[in-house]
Image (cartoon, rainbow, N blue to C red; front, side, top):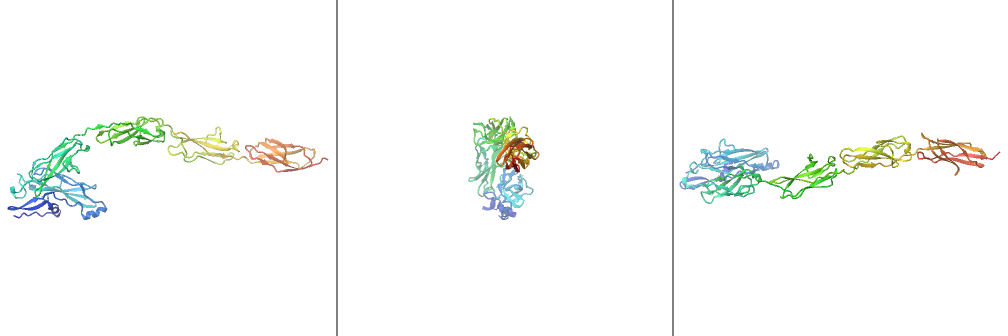
Length: 528
């Protein structure tokens, strides 16, 4: 007898080639399934690999899988692959005996009598812009003929692999508890058994052994497994275990075994940090919230905190919350600190004085810059010769006669809320004395024994000088007098006969420079 296979599309012929074989039997030829599931197509063609430089190779991290009990009227469910790149779209086509089933393009399929005696698979094609499509063919689920008949035409002479007793899960359901599959009882010996565990009907990556330990992420969900048996020359058989609910894990509270502690200098402008508490469990993660007078400080959720002017004199603490999966969060308060005044302000740009240092001219104090933060308020105190000038507290100052011959400076005080004030005194600026001019007038001849009168004057521009004038005959001092109003008539002592050179020397004052007159040449004649 000759059994003719229907012509399959190239893809399906390649996918199913290892799954089908012709076996000679008494009285004819029987078509049977190979021992393993149909091999999927390669995940990437050469052209796809050439596109690797643009987007990478598209492949399934978890391949598609059919679950369910093979039988007419029994729903089969397809779990779609998980891809290594985002944005992949999936096209599904169910197959019967390697041929497409018209209209069967969803994630579930209910076999009909048309599929009885064949194996049902699904072909999933992943598509992503810029890459060629990648196709995978799932495991095969055999659909037996009604009444338990085989699909090869050889009748009872062909053995059939069947499940005599369904697999089941044993163990105490719970997070961290070991669960184990009791294998099904097969109708034939030598069956190779494979496994796939599911949580809430989603395949668990890597969970392909006979045991499984639920994690915290599985609490409150249902666990089951798909058990697949393969035997050379016979269709593959799959069976589902019972569904086992995993109860929600009972969380225990974390407990701190030491306090949280604020470290660092509690001053405005300084950075303080918190030392984490220790707990009754390892691997605890921490979250932080700093508080001012019991209220959360917006944005202050780090391990460190910079104290601000608003914190001055207030009660500052930090709440440290410990958390770990499977445990109830616990929060610990640190000790309270009350920040003191910040350090005195220091300038980043030095204060100075602008203007001409001269009588009647206005000087201006420039306060400079004093670091970051709010602009400080400034006060001023002018100084003469290092001493405070009473009432001179403006940013400007007019040079007065009292300043002549002395020095001027200004002390700038910068004040910012919650910081100690910063002070700086500018360099002393000398105030020059006023220039003076001394004059000496008188007769150029006189007689011995007759009085000699001269007129002495000291002139200062715009200022009435005061000070002592010495009258010299050569280097000999004839007389000293005080100039009170700028000029004065003086009677010289009696002079001897001969020539005399008379000079007036002004000694100057606190406000004026010294000066010397031109010499007056006087000839004293003998008596008549």
